[in-house]
Image (cartoon, rainbow, N blue to C red; front, side, top):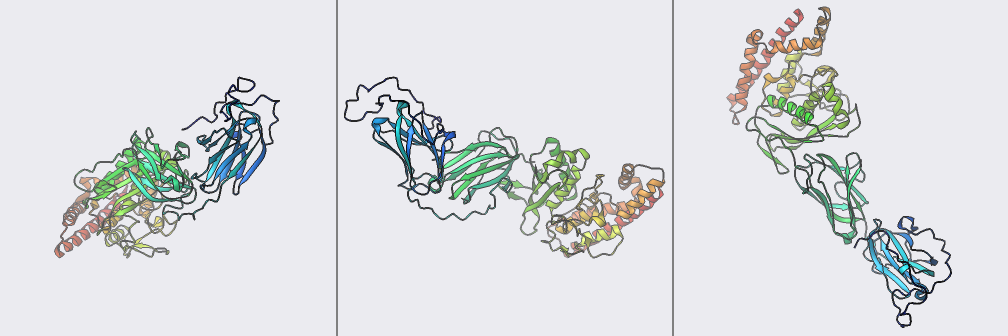
Length: 599
């Protein structure tokens, strides 16, 4: 039974002895004759739970004497460092004839746990089975009775303290900042074999739909082994809901009415060797996979409708480049054809620093190509990136990492010199494309050799490629083309690709020459010049035989790559078509450069 913090105190309305005072057996409700006003004890004021006198942590039997019940109630607070033993108790001793005193035990939430209201010279409540923690003692006169002298004894007995349990695999997750990331949950999921060894466990999860009355977070445990409480916290650190029962074997908070986004679960309490966490999130909004071709499915968390549209635009870009269907897979009960990406906006490190981070985390057997990954963008940067127009390119960049660019190079054996000053990507098709565009005969594509662990060895070299989409830095002018080298690198990873979908890309030296020509020719804007480059690339009247050869080679490559049982002759034809594509691409670039020099 849960009561209000204070019991109702009824002032005695009669003076003198009760009509039944002559009965030999003491009768509840027989106040003594009124005497002079009592002088209260040294522990006052302690007339409410909030003003309770703190007795500290009790480790041995402790008795406080010379207490006086002169007002409505006396409150005391104490702490048990271990679970209460069978001999643990709280006792009041007094002369009943001088005033009947009752005893109640409360927890920190104001819930009454134990009560003793007899008619003898003492009252006692047991502490047996209660978890370690803070407790409150309330001593009060029955029907307002006073008493000039009573004593209080707290005896915790000799509790057996079990050794602390070994913590679980989700550690270290003992604070909001260190919360274990459970990712975006598309459906109900249970995490078992969890251990409370240090007083607090924090978890973080995202849901893609608004919470309903059937959505919740809960924990299950054996209360006898250690009581646990549950709190739901917003991504800003504000408490949303709490569940705390001193005797239950479970706690549950509802997600009803909460918007899609990221939330934190806070489990706290006494040491407990085993508990489970279940999260039934808001409904997941997943892009349905269309039939045929390469498909990217997206789930969203913390993103506006317009931002979700930009993600869809980025996915369409990659879907136009990768043409071959991959074997279907399943991720947490969700059918995947061909790649499922969980996209979210969440705090990372504040505005203007790390914009986003992404990577694959599930891979197909055999090909090793990803079928699931996560993209996280710093919520502090989303509005500014959307405003300045860089958001689309940044999303395209991070999707490239989930596809495997920079993230599975080592696994595929396509990266050499990692950690040195000269790392190189050695996929044959990317190397050929690089040599054609840059006019070199290198044996590998230059890879970034500066920056942190998330930048070096996983991007094209900024010094060589400058503004190419898959370098490690975003361009202020939002001009980040996806080059033929990047498309060819996907083919080296094992994807079937459409080489013709590469963006027009010029090496930095050629681009600088165009900029200089632009300055000397009357100041046509850089945006207009870039538009001219793209227009020249797509103008059928200008493209001529080189462009026609590119179209033919691309069609041949697509046909050959779609054959799962390629013969040696087919492989030879594929190599010939690839060589023709790259040779004519070089010719096309040279013609383009000549025209641009004439502008």
